[in-house]
Image (cartoon, rainbow over all chains, first blue to last red; front, side, top):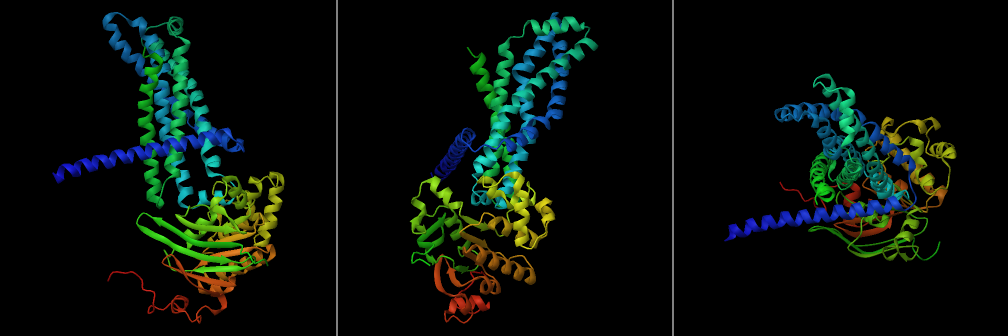
Length: 261
Length: 257
């Protein structure tokens, strides 16, 4: 009997803990967003965060996109050639990239870079009293540290994904024309023929959501970190793991919302 | 000096989980006074200051500044009050992403009392008050020694000319000479501003140099208040044990042997 109760208590503790964290994250997000909308604004900090997220993530995101496009073209060729459906390759590549792989892979890459960096930076500021110091210096730390990053992440990710989309299609085109016997014109024509604006737009909306989630989890983990170097390390891990899982879960939710019916 | 104390704490209580850190702290600090709060590690000194600054919300009790209860204030007024308070953190807490001059003028810039163009000159002026050359302004905090970081922290705390300044262990981690230098700077700056200063420390030499009045906190309560000059021969067994650093006395360290 006590064993059963212990097991149930352990499950209950876990569930309650998860609910508490979820509530805290939501409140943190609402407060962050409210500070985006109310002055004073910090254009300098928004700019710095934007450069950090968009510009410095470009190389990783670009490489990921090119290789993903190349792999997609190769894989779909080996599958489709069995049914004589090679002409669908360009179409498969562009739809997979714009709808799914562009935003998701770019999101995961940025989560690794930016989520970790923000959590470590804000976490170190927390454990060295710099966040308390902001308050004593007439500055709201949520407004100064969190709001500019949330805003920059939400704007930067869609821009990164536009580039990822283009480079992903280019990767497919490279393999298509160099290896699979497409002419450049026929590959690009079949790429554009079936592409709907909604395919790209849904991907960009996903990207904006992912950008928000990545910066949110990075800021939240850092902001709430405790206990010196170990706490900052744990915050960094939490930021990357939680934002990666949230990206994949929200990708399903958003896909169902856009294309479900 | 008015009869209303600048800062008045009554029954300040704070628990973290099962641990009671503050157990009804009562303390009055008169305007323009230099108050030193003494106490061992974990006695609740830092938590008291953080409660006054609004960084920690106490569970019970009242905090009055200029006779007004800050805990009952709307957030906006509370923030306006913080504009008139300065704080020197124990480890400096300088912003390592900003150069020294921006650290020093951070509050003035945040309150838009100064333009960025003028902030460098202002920073040089304040740095001179703590005995640092203007060229230090262009360095990053990580390039400074411990004593210099403390002085930059002090410059940042006084740049906006606050009415109340808190010092969290200003001499901890410094050699005795640098400690004396920092103490001298603190006394000069506080006197020049006519500010009320509250310092927490366990450095007796420092306490006598910067304090007019001293209070001793033990297990979350103020156990003694008196002139800082009498530390060591106050007549209170706890205070004298602490001031003289004796092992034997009413304060027992909770060590397991």
